Image 1 (cartoon, one colour):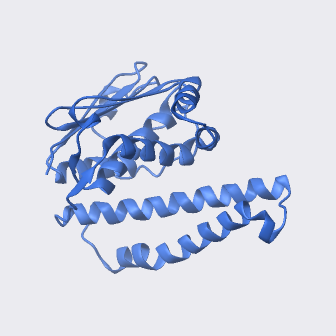
Image 2: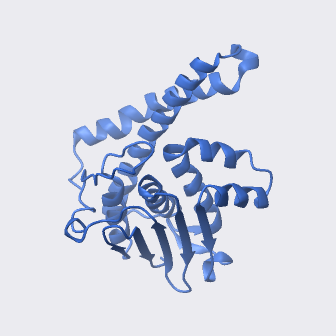
Image 3: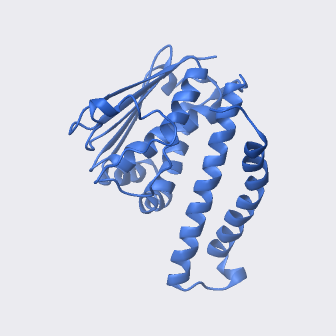
Length: 246
């Protein structure tokens, strides 16, 4: 990441406020029909698209903030409940890439129904090891951001399945696997470069900016961890992140 400059200050500080106003206002229109009146289906669809993209822009700005904070050595020492972070990261990723799945999950009544919806959409989530029960000490926002980006990437490139496994008894280990077309060996050195976008004919959902994986790598390295990718053409992709506790 380049050193912080006035343009970055503009992006982070001066755009965050207006974007928040847009998303809050549109969200109110969609959720408070008793106050603002009914919305025809065609208009509702447009407003929902506006809200999704405003939230995407807010998420990108937040990622920039967290990357800069990490490069300056600024970490919160939070007591993190990993299962909660995983769930929130999953919902945020799906809101961006697969809003229909996110909507179905938000309406799920209880954990069994939540798991059923995940399974019906080819999504598997497993939290095991020490941190399935004990607190993990680190910066909550950064762990959630790393997990969200890995899920978003896998959901964009998958064919039918995405598997998320969180484990570890000393360090936290996050593994995200998809059944997509995979990454050719000659391109694996480039996927963590900023604004590099891997073309994929099966890709679904909103196209990214090529920022997510570079963001993950930057955060993980400043957190004294590492990230490994295992992939090959036609073999899907598996990203594994290791993060030591503070």
